[in-house]
Length: 387
Ligand SMILES: [Zn+2]
Ligand SMILES: [Zn+2]
Image (tube, rainbow, N blue to C red; front, side, top):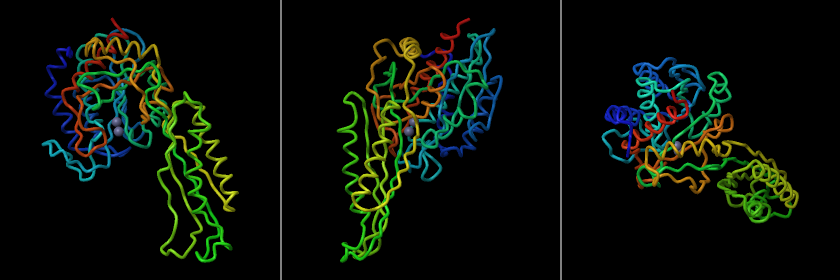
């Protein structure tokens, strides 16, 4: 695999960075050690500007090329997950109950590797903005960095991100020309009735009956309201009702769940129909209802032209036979979507060899793909903004 020679030359150093990050996982926006490590490395590497404290612990660093030109954004996520690691690796997490189970330690390492190479060589025009974000696994740190204005502040024209893929053979790179990950919305429904004695249901109103009926009825949105060619998932994942005794009709029942989709139309349909069905059910059962539909990560949609460009660069690094431009989109979600909503770009998945899946306690990032990802990032810059 033609990793850039200079990057291959410091692959062992990248492995040390990755193992440090893996031993020191942190959650959400609260990444003091991780951010300090990244800023320290960027400073050693000698990038031109380091801007810390964006979205609490996010960092944007700038590398100037030779001569004027646009700014290209490269993004890595830095946060870990609340999972107890079972890999038994020498570099296993030293923080109980927290681990890098999604490989964000590897993504951060890839971007630091690209930073080291690009700072040394500077074979490009314009600038690179290195975006290190917190809170990808919840909290939408990428969205917060966008809302804090990084795209305009650093004049970023296009933006790219990488995720490792333990479902792909080593180096096999997915570059979709359009949708790649779904939106992830949540809904919370509360039914309230009078409750009462379980032996006197005729004088009570029972929110539990209504909740059970509603769980069934909500499934009709996917089967009856959704156009056939539009992907959509509606999963009711929570139902809370009842008290300490079986002889009490409890006065409240709650339902929670998630909606996954690839378009605003389907998200709007979900919100609208969930509300209609819930209100109809409540009326039928004589209880009151409250619906809270919360829009979270938008769908991740690559720009077709930038995806084709990223695929060309990927072919150079991993070989033409290892680039898949028509991967099946996934119903999971990714907050790089907020950046792609602001600027054209692409999100690619690089195979790390088929193995333990993401978010599992025995998952580990494959250090051998860090130089591949770093080379891909570096060549994106050199190819997009050549001297
Ligand atoms: Zn994850
Ligand atoms: Zn991830």
